[in-house]
Length: 413
Image (spheres, rainbow, N blue to C red):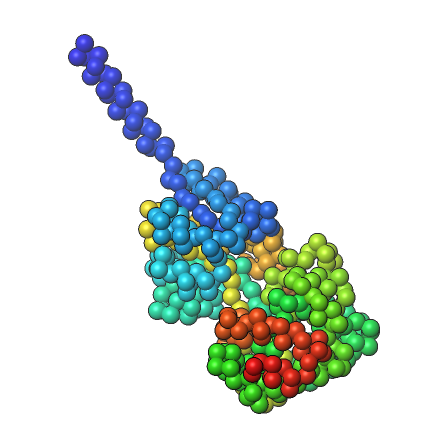
């Protein structure tokens, strides 16, 4: 009897050992994408491919959409197991770094898809630097992917039909291009309520920098001569007929669809626009991109602009930091850096990726030249309590309902 019991105990022990050898490491990922979005589909395919290559890893994918901005922190504070997540690099680096694992040591290592180079040497440097800048303590807490720049998205066919041989770089050239486009009977510029603040914010910033723009918004310095000058520049554009008459009533996302339908030539926004309007624009739409023009006597250059990316962030309390970073490398280099860009009409983040999305070819020349970083809308939205009033009056200015002087007077109330 003792012998039988001993054999049974040995059998149970061996069985338990066998089970532990095949037990998978479970990693939980929270995504900022909805599963139906092209970005969500691309990331999902990449992670599924990773799991096929690493049968000891199981990634639980949770597609939260933009609700992650509200739900992630409470979940982490409650102690819910979430090993990594993604969101805008400014949000992850600034607001969520207290939950995050510093990645400075991980990016100095060589991985299978980095061509024998340290990871940090094959990722767009300006984005790694931006992550550290946002963090404010010199450390890197986020890994960028899906880079973007905030520029004029434009219709190349309309420019060609108008006889515009090169994209404008100065305000004078910009006005000349608008005159040629208007002669075709097409509004040169469109916008909508969600995006329009950038037109004035960028323009003021070109004259005197984004720190000045933020000071205006925070301290109410709307009667500064530079603000009036910038507002007058745009008042003139409206009076010349260079701004779409639909701007007064355009609600998000009407502006980008007006561009996509060929009903306007330009729209100031991020390079994510083509992805969001592909169903409207179609594959044959000729996309172009150029930076906001410089102004005479201004302080800021052509390549000073808002830029950034989405980003992956790792929980400092994860049990599997090495494995999670390996997944991120898989997503941001090699085959899947290219595939994610292809499937979501986005940009690659690895400098080793030779593919460049057809719709965004012009931006390939912009990234190496990036200058000063612009906050959203040039900084004009920094005072969130005042933003609705700013937005309402910029819409009135850009639609000809008020003059530049009246804009300043409204903002001083």
